[in-house]
Image (cartoon, rainbow over all chains, first blue to last red; front, side, top):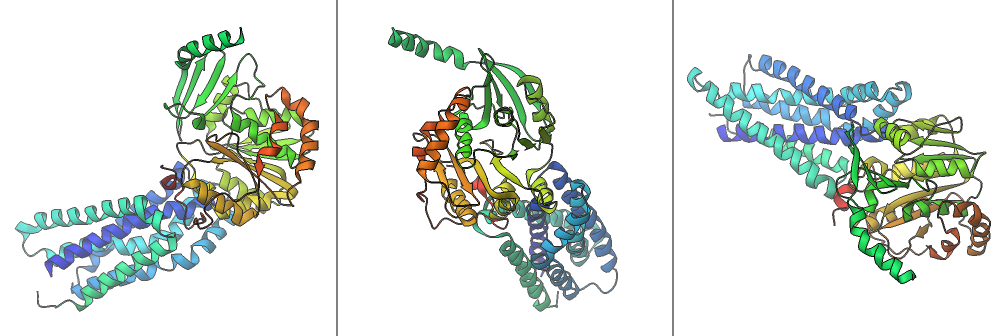
Length: 195
Length: 293
């Protein structure tokens, strides 16, 4: 069980950074590839994660369970997968009334990524709650969780930028990321609850 | 006597290669270096010097185009000798837009350049000057193209020269971008693109252009690392037509060192690429990863 939660934290980190990198590619046809496009994306992801942490912490206060944890993953997938269908329309819409590509990319990035990233941001604090048993070990557990989730982020970044974009279409990668969240969410849902 | 001169030149060549860097700056997008070798001034985007990543002028003869690919881009005039509205994507030292504005005094030339520092350097060192009819827009070419398209603007000639060799803006090498660019072309409009001829990207890029324009001309001179793609919204002209046009253009273009009469016979319609190569799209655009070898 403990191992599964670490694996889930890893997957969370992996998906977040892979999504962030795809974000730059998604916005480029409408807002270019300039530094401010990346600025918009990173801002939106950081802000969303920060609120996701708050929300995840709050959610862990009442009846924390692995099943509720699983719901975060399934919800993350549900918020992310619509990007495959609606991203173009949303960007077209923003492009049609916002001339400045800085604020255009900021607004588009916000509309596309705030919801899934807030949800995915809930994973980290929630997994701390599920794993910590005693005050003494809390720092150690949090340290390990940061380690696996940031390691996941690093590999998500590397895998996406070096290989996935060379092998697959962007929508395929998005669907696979969503599938990964669903798969591991389902594993968590079905995991034995005796621990 | 001539061979002696040649021998001396060849002996002195290595000396000339060691230029002097007279300006260096880091812009928002790249490192800009200006390097002087005798009368030749070059704008480079990388320490490594090769034809692909620079734009040069000869101060003693500033009209003369130093690189073959720049000269080859002028072959677009064989497809449409009198463009009225011209768009050049990628400024570099400004060689192409300056030449076009001078050769076609009735034309309007628009340039899109993402990097304001390149515009500054072109004006300061390369004698580039904006005017009523020659105007630079400092913005991303993809954004410019989309906006110009929604305003309903059109151009008779569009030149794509935005790839500096070390780095290709991947959102400018997709089917969707070429479709947006094609939509900017007026009836009978022509697209000229300076592209890659050596890596695996050649197949993918060719397949992408073919998916948007159908048949196009490939202009390559004796296995150079560059090839120029010439495509049109109408049927491509016959060889005889191009020869006639070349004969008329030969005089005005000779000042630029462009032997335009050599080009028609080097323009091929053969699809000499791997037909199974995957088309680059906004969904699949790993141009830089495909350009490694």
